[in-house]
Amino acid sequence: VESVIVAIDGPSGTGKSSTSKAVAAKLGLRYLDTGAQYRAITWWMITNGVDVEDAQAVAVAAAKPVIVSGTDPAAPSISVDGLDAAGPIRTQEVTSKVSAVSAVPEVRTLITDLQRSIAAQADGGIVVEGRDIGTTVLPDADLKVFLTASPEARAARRSGELKGADVHATKEALIKRDAADSSRKTSPLAKADDAVEVDTTELTLDQVIECVVTLVEEKR
Ligand code: C5P
Image 1 (spheres, rainbow, N blue to C red):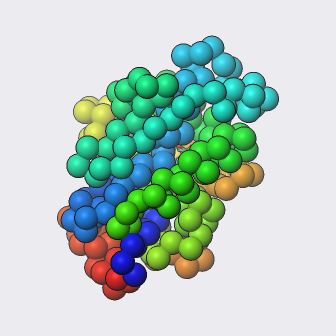
Image 2 (image 1 turned 30 degrees about the vertical axis):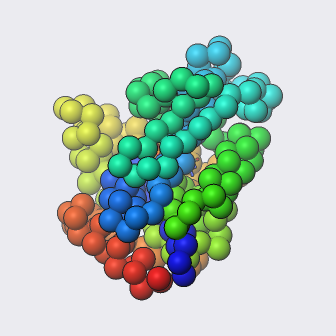
């Protein structure tokens, strides 16, 4: 396979982003953070006064924002209507509202189409990370990886990233978001039947990267 497509899915805090970026950089592939796209549309809904709990309103507004993702693994970027959204999409407000927005079928259809066109245009191949990449967005991916980790490990990693955030509160929020993402009707967080599951609880980031690089090389 000269143009390899890699799908990396799993719940939050399993190291998806760090792993996906590093694997893409090492292998000369493009990189797409699909969570950032759902966060970007959520940020747009919030700043434009759309009630994110109102699925009908979210569905109607979904096509308005123009979301552009930069796919360089060394400098991934995301913009909404030409505005840099990299900072604003990481706030607690966006994090707490993104599951409601991403559960709306119209939102998923639009973002899934965008993801497929980005993957199709990625010369040399791409690593795409998310929740439903292996099951729904790119079911023909050359390699599918499903990352897992214990809730304790995931909360500890996330609190570390948020510099001193309360581990217990972070764990509760993570569990709540994963439960919402796993139980929604349209393309929930799920492991594809043909995905390779990697439990990262006892692994360092470098070990996870090495493991995924080896899996990709086996497919090339
Ligand atoms: O990966 P990240 O934590 O940034 O994802 C934010 C949210 O975006 C997830 O909690 C989920 O609600 C949504 N998402 C999704 N499908 C994807 C990627 C993310 O529904 N492929």
